[in-house]
View (cartoon, rainbow, N blue to C red):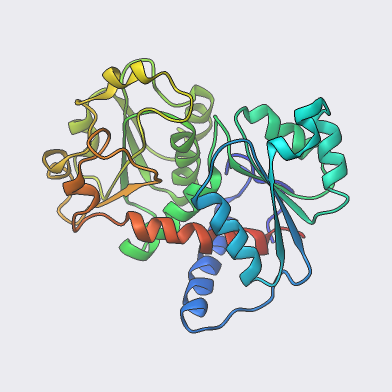
Length: 301
């Protein structure tokens, strides 16, 4: 069990709890491959609220609840009363009377914070404009599988210091992975997150992607233009921050490439990298299922 009621950023999970979640995720994955599926959440219900489109988040949470013996409700924002004026607070109070846990994929982080504040049951941030903790659990699980450890590794983040990057910093801090972040000026990650984590691990901020990837064990990027971003921002990133074969060659020979997906091939990453031998993006995507099952099983629901 984790002490925090909610998981909104990943900062709520301490080092020991993180290790326990990842170890459980790896065990659940192995069990599933053997045809073993224990009903750890029998008769439990997950309410899934979606303001944004979703492939991996929706399918992995829904399949995960089914495999754990529970049930998931897919609720688009247009199907709920906030679309007609009900407050987020009232919605949270109502849903938490019906469901055992709430997962919300939203625009503003304040929305998921309001849900958590007013819900009697745990709330999981399935993505907000500020954080994406579930993705980082899957990423850390993937790194541990591929590298056999977490502590002492170096991760290079290339591109936008966005919501995924913010949660990645928290994850690296708890896993004792140093991180080098290369972004264009004005696109750095949250200063508050940096301030919270800089005493725990080495954090390098740079505008030079080649500097960031030197001696790195893991290279990570994300789309340069996310949902409802101004397409004109692409010129700030492309081609300097594109992860291509030349940039990957600057990392350690055994470095792995990761991307949370969906990817815009030819923009933030070339096909030669995402489809290459160093890419682990499909294992990373699969691990959303296993790490979220472990998170759900670790909450007090």
